[in-house]
Amino acid sequence: NIPPGPKPWPVVGNFGGFLVPSFILRRLAKYRKEFAKMSSNPLSPQAGLMEMSKLYGNIFSIFVGPQLMVVLTGYETVRDAMLNHPEVFSDRPQIPLVTIITKRKGIVFAPYGSLWRTNRKFCHSTLRSFGFGKLSLEPCIYEGLTMIKTELQSLIEKAGPSGIDLTPLISNAVSNVISSMSLGQRFHHQDQEFRTMLDLMSHGLEISVSTSILLVNVFPWLYYLPCGVFKELRRAELDITAFLKKIIARHRATLDPENPRDFIDMYLVEMLAQQKGDNSEESLFSEDDLFYIIGDLFIAGTDTTTNSVLWSILYMSLYPDVQEKVQQEIDAVVGSESVPSLTDKGSLPYTEATIMEVQRMTVVVPLSIPHMASETTEFRGYTIPKGTVIIPNLWSVHRDPTVWENPDDFNPDRFLDEQGKVLRKDCFIPFGIGRRVCMGEQLAKMELFLMFTSLMQTFTFRLPEGKSAPSMHGRFGLTLAPCPFTVCVKAR
Ligand code: HEM
Image (cartoon, rainbow, N blue to C red; front, side, top):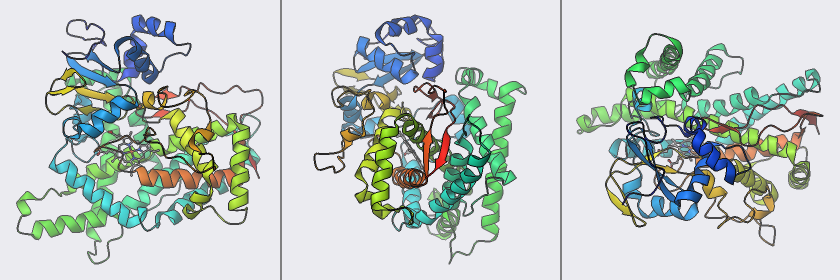
């Protein structure tokens, strides 16, 4: 009694053996037609899967090759699975491409077990001690903002009526926050080595969801082909590895255990302490693991936050009335002389509600990160066999008409109560929910708040004259990025 779904073809399943739904749905002309009847929008994978739930229900199956995947739709279903059955649904699947690259180490793709628990616990408490708790990350975020503001001022003068693409500036400021925390160093956006690493990461991420690379999930040996995108991806992997390993080695050579400078130092100190201890053989700390954790922090923490900031600028350009209201609130509370700080958050409810509404509309990790059933279980009347890949459709949670009124409308007021205070809604879960909830949620919220308020305080954004808005479905990759856009920026 597995959940219902479209009948799979022999061997290739429903989607010809590919794991990422953007590719799946692009290929699946048959379903596209079916969905198109129901939806006036061209389909994005997350919207396509939500439409499929209208045919098959909130828990439905699809087969990717021989692999059974179960898609969870809507708030109630996702919440029930992740909060009421955490022991069963918190594992991660073995996706061949991901396994080759991550070796299932680090945090994001580590199986649910002791290594994941140790890494996550250590990472969370260490990052907390650096910033989440003591607010010491604030100056680090400000530095990035100062860089953005200075660069923007000079770009405004040069930019013509076609506007500016803000992606490189925002991406650099966001990566620098992770970099300061984990590597202990900031990089100028023109620093060649750092730029190369960021470019390699984003290029690597881009090609890793390309059609040919996804074939690695069916034929893992393809990854080692000495040509084309396979060679390119391996090159990117090698270069990133060399860059991070060099930084780790530099830390090790200059380590002063009494004065750890950053996350790497803290990890090395703990690793050395465990190696000296009685249970050194059981230690789960190693330089190899450290390398994968840092890779995870960059990959999980850069694109997600960058795209969220970019989406918020795009939405403000499209909704000038909301932008003006946000600016008025910031002017009244913070003024134009001081920089917005986290302590202002409680006094800027409309601004916070706007950020939340942008996150709700855009859900930058729309299909979450795949989970896996670690044992056969009964869930809401269906049997979910051990090894089933579980896809929580977070996008559907934030467009769920049973919990959101007019879910397709952009309306920050939905996050405010009658007194104008921020309403915390359980069904707002862009960071996921349960044991695997985003580890960087607090950091991301700090970054989003400080970047958004500072940008709104200093600049006004609008779309270039005569240029229509980009498709608001975004570009589905590892995260949901806005389609490329430029904005005209005016200093206030
Ligand atoms: C996992 C969202 C920023 C680190 C996740 C997941 C989501 C998510 C949906 C998957 C949850 C699940 O599997 O159920 C976001 C969003 C962000 C953001 C929307 C920004 C707006 C960050 C940042 C960091 C980070 C800044 C780094 C410090 C992680 C890690 C995981 C994760 C390590 C894996 C957790 C695990 O498997 O235990 N995030 N994230 N994220 N995120 Fe984030």
